[in-house]
Image 1 (spheres, rainbow, N blue to C red):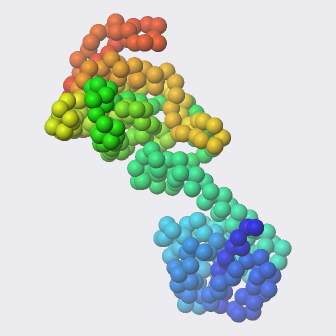
Image 2 (image 1 turned 135 degrees about the vertical axis):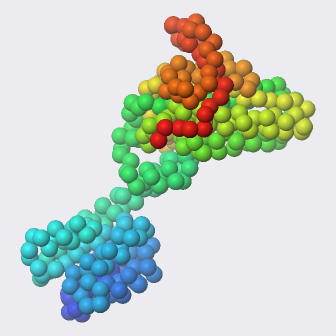
Length: 356
């Protein structure tokens, strides 16, 4: 059985509050306030419970407009629908209320059917928005830092973003060279320890550069830039994350050497181009990921990169311009799965600046 919604009725006229309560209390839990100031106090105390506000426009001490000014300052209240009521029949009054942030406008004297319908519709919109918010949080909080998820929630994510769409992204793969032989010599607990340390290091570097952590594949990490949020300098940010990882690789390798007697290093591959990005999988298990030739090419670059190297494509090097110091390995590199030879470059250094 669906939980009864709690609504807040705000009106300085007790008769009006009684009228609203008489035809709403059968369907809703009701809280009351006699003016805007009292309404703010009730709303602050019951933010998590209230799913709708019926707000009178003309009241002493704090009227409906002043209440909306305070309401709009609080992000935690923005998903609570406010329906403003007034006996003023002028269109400009209704427009001003909607411009102030009201979800709907009700005219006095009240029509019970109209009030019920518009209140029910507003609460349904709120609940759908909350379902979408939880969906976004559940999907994206695993892949990116909370600040980026908040931007997504603020700007909105459509069903198209989940279904998958073609986008230009920069893709990074990084793994531990020497991990396979190391894992063959160690107990399972030690393998888990060193792997978790590596995955934490790489995921934190990705987050610091604003990337989307796609997945962990054994001792490999995959990430991309440019989705779900647009990114103007995705090539630079991916390379910045790679350099960040390599700057920490020495300490990580020394740690492995001291504890386990074998040093390890990171190999990175970065490519950019068009890929299909979205939520893919079975009905009961989906992952937000990128698929396509761009992803495969980045993976191939990482697979041929020697320990300690960052291999990038010509597309990435062109976007970096003079911000990246690179060495070309030639245009006749053969990558598995590619019909034509491919130019591969080593990223040696990266300037600190990025284009805003």
